[in-house]
Structure formats: C-alpha cells, structure tokens
Image (cartoon, rainbow, N blue to C red):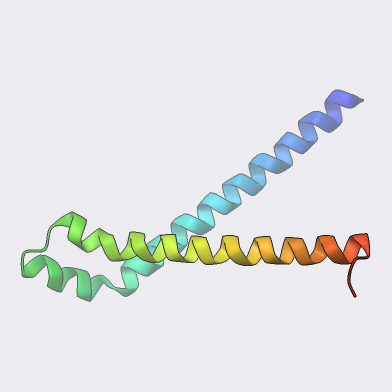
Length: 87
C-alpha cells in the first residue's frame, strides 16, 4: 500500500515538473519570437551572442528576485495568520 502511494506521488511530481519545464520553455520562445526584429537588427550591426543574451538574462534574474520576495512575504503573512499572531 505504501509503495503505491509513493509511486503515485512521484508520478504526479514528474508530471508537474514536465509541465513547468514546458511552460518555461514556451515563455522563453515567445519572448525571443516577439523580439526577433530587435535581435536581427542587433546581429546586423555586429552584436555578439553574449551582448544579445544579456538583457534576457538580466530580466529573468530580476523577475526571479521579485517572485522570491513576494513568495516569502506572502508565506510570512500566511504563517502569522495561521498561528493567530495577527493583531
């Protein structure tokens, strides 16, 4: 009985991981596709691959930091409400 639940949980986790990776991949592809004219213009004037990638990486790092901040803040708020320390 225990192994059936264990395997089921791992299958659900793997499915959710696959969905997350697919969503991230599609988001990156859409971002690049929407900026294809800017990227082509940068390539025409001689920009290196690193120079073209830098804005995308910087934007993703800033979004990550923003999400981590909000997730931590909402987790703390939920924890205080659950414990009952809310004034």
